Length: 245
Image (spheres, one colour):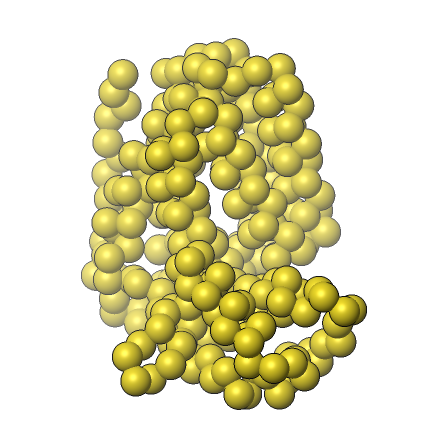
């Protein structure tokens, strides 16, 4: 881990970004303790900004606070991964349908810019950039749909998905399949631009289960990773559900 120096008034935001990055890229392992005193010494700040950072990251689902034990990096819940995928599928499909229905010309410009950021991160093999730009793109789709309840719930699932995606990316790099990351968002933009609600539903559904299948392959591949391969194997394969109007 790198030591940091901060400009006056910027410490909390910069520490939050640094810790978030280390959690998302698994440099901070799931379940690892997040001791306020240790973090304050590392970043050379008082405990007050550290508490604020941990509170923010807890709101993102990246940190858990345990009674009488302080904070830890939130565990990655493999046991309920299939349930997570079901929830993500439903929210992603509906959010993308709403985006296709309500998008404006300005929205399309925004989505295309975010898709460009993702493509740049893929070309640069920037894992954190891929995680962040993928999150930003899909979060934007939720906002384009103009339903704050759907956007909020979808955003929560997207936040939780980021560490799953990192494992997926690591697997593709290890197996020289990084090209599978490229241009993943083109079909979303095409369906949303055409305001084709059914195509938007189909693209979102296929995207979710492509991620599901590749993630399970990644877990099985990483036999020496800090995850239970038995749990991953127990998840099994899931059949795609029919697209409904």
